[in-house]
Image (cartoon, rainbow, N blue to C red; front, side, top):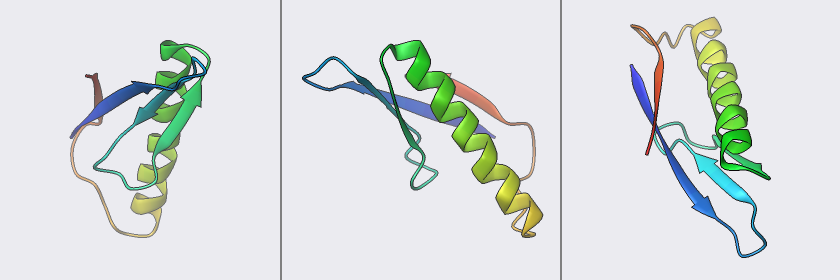
Length: 66
């Protein structure tokens, strides 16, 4: 399973990274790379929670930055 990361930049310079297919998976960073790292970590936590609650996600997990 591959998740696309969408990036945006706020007026104050902060970066926002979001994975739209995982509701609520959104992170801010002072750099684009920091935002990407944070959103990937959050996505993995959400996926792990789904697996633990038997809402299994099949396959390999990959991220693609847009």
